[in-house]
Length: 305
Image (tube, rainbow, N blue to C red; front, side, top):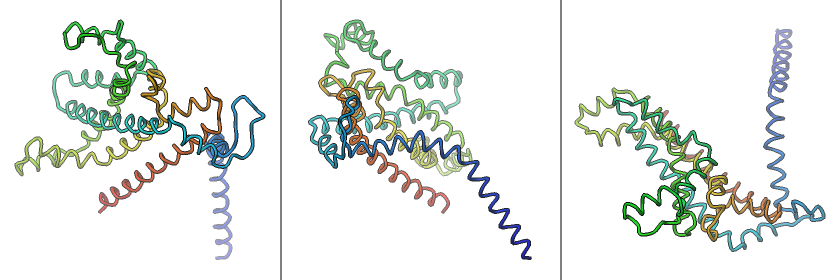
């Protein structure tokens, strides 16, 4: 009996050593690519740090945070980030869900329509931004040409150069490119719904609208929760789309927190302020993740019963 216990202990230690050795490359990878940059940002947030002047240094306490919060562009950047994020996610959700419902209907040419719907998502962000910039150009853009020739407007609209139009325009373009991701997710979830549920609802006298709200939508809660919260974080930290189309202009009308971080770090070379603002964004996105985790846990408990 004692020899068996010794053998079990030896086998357990051997398995533990093998597990540690097998996971060590992944731990080193995460520590190098995520851990070190994250610790550097948190350290720089409380330090005087300059990108090109090595003489700048030392502990700064909360000075960088005070500088960021007192920046006159901080408030507008927070407001624009909320408008950009919520507007994009709501638009992507509504249009993505509508497209999935239509693509789930069996019609001739269904495959063609599905492929055509997914094309915007395959276009790189830089290409999509530059293409829409040309389409909406007030001098030679085809969209303004159509508007003026049809008589809908008297003169071309400077969609990206007018502060009253700029944010709505970049939100629209972001929705155009990203809604296929929602469509793919919703369509896959819809095709997994058992037909028996729809047949039972029909026998109870439920019409198409009632079946959608009572059968389809409850079955989409899980996938909706995942893609909405993921896209809230992805959109909030997105930098390249707005930078390609407006660079935060005109007159800071589309400046968001990632654009402000870029300007601190690579235009003013103030790494301390950029790290402080990055830390604030990290806290905000972490809170979003905590909310997601709580909702996800509650949904799992309801599903399990």
